[in-house]
Image 1: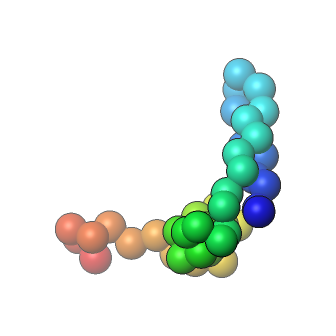
Image 2: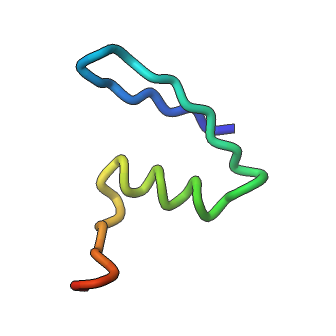
Image 3: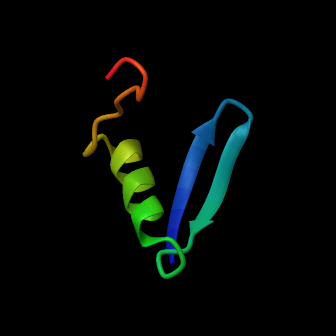
Length: 45
């Protein structure tokens, strides 16, 4: 399990990501959150 902490103006949010259930989704989320993966708009490319 991967744990992510999102920092917001209202406080921190702890999120548990289940690698074993959705490995590609977790990989994409972590990649986007860390900047390792670039986000592309599916409409404009």
